[in-house]
Image (spheres, rainbow, N blue to C red):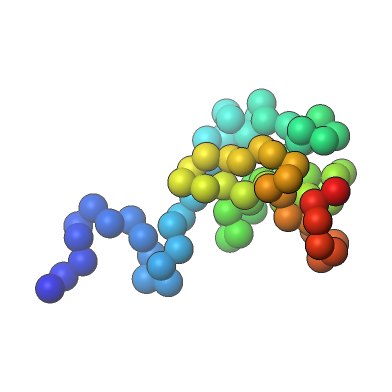
Length: 78
C-alpha cells in the first residue's frame, strides 16, 4: 500500500513545522522581550539573549519558559 497522498510527514517521521513570517515579526522572548530567530531544522524559536529555544509543536510556538530548552546544554531552562 502507498502512503496517504495528504500525508506531509517526511520519511524520517518528523513533522515539518513552519512559522508564518508575520507571526515571527511580532513574537518576542517572554523572558527578555527580545527578538527570536527561527530554526527550521529543530522546529524551534531561538532567543539568543536568553539562551533558550522554544519548541514549535503542531505549528504552534510554545512560548513558555518552563518548556524552553537551554542552549548551553545545562539542565533546566532558566
